Image (cartoon, rainbow, N blue to C red; front, side, top):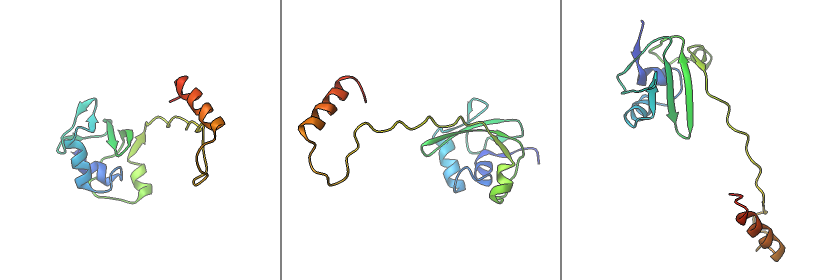
Length: 121
């Protein structure tokens, strides 16, 4: 087995929950193989670079082994090399108020307006 459909492979290595989700991502233009748009039937083979936007996250993986049937998570991870860069560190919120704490005070409002004028968001 040297190649398989990209929608089947995405499902088999557990990057998508279902095969129809993988096919929909391909049809929506969210999957690219070697920097080319991929249809669900596009063949994927070892050495290919797959960029898939699944939900809010973009995954960049390199195909190591082609499988057609869904396998356990430990076996699925061995089928690709994850080249996805780590997410940027979360920036702490400037003004966090406890829920139900009431309206901001005049001092809080002034600090918030100063932050908005400085381009804080």
